[in-house]
Length: 256
Image 1 (spheres, rainbow, N blue to C red):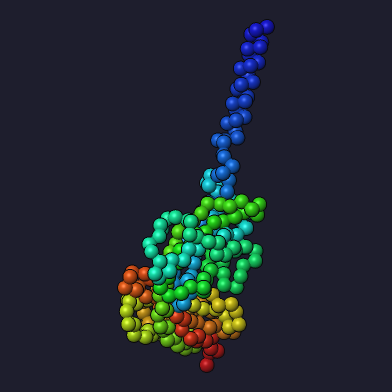
Image 2 (tube, helix red, strand yellow):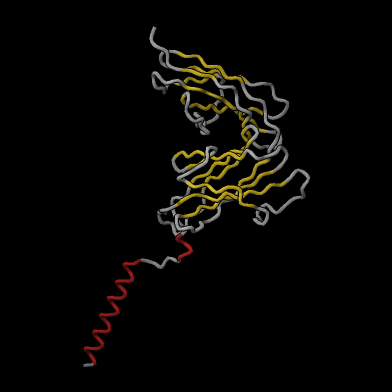
């Protein structure tokens, strides 16, 4: 009888261990929230700040995350005459903007898992720092991103842009005005259909170093509007976009 009881106990413990093994390691509830947004950058663009970041696709346990509803953006402003502050402290941050992915404002655009939003409420001379926290449909906050900061200066002058249309391409020519300070790193070129929403994402992946650009990936019968910004490294080492050029329009011409 004792042998039967002992055998049943051994079998029961074996089944329990096997069942636990199939479930995998225990995951704490704190790890089931979205990970922090990645690739967070803040860059001056004309007289505004352009904030870019990537939405998380995993939770803190490293598993695919679902149900990210939006992000909360907090901002800290250090004024010109303010004493040095703790750069890693969060005490001076204030909630600046809540973005819902299903209803984003006009100054925010999404490109895949990347978001670009503009902060136009900035003043030259101040330092603006941003921290981003994702939240779920259930109202759970995820991890906070690394802090991205930018010192805003008076906007650099806009370049001059001209467009010339041909049957198979549109050729664009960019020229810069003389800078009083800083060094030109290249240009960012923007394109959108005539009548469409102006894109916050440059047409070029890397800064354009030359003064000419040929755009051949176009749809015949569609008009396009272009604008350009100069990328400038200031004397402090910050990289900023200049003010935006006047728009130039182009379209594929019919064969003559």
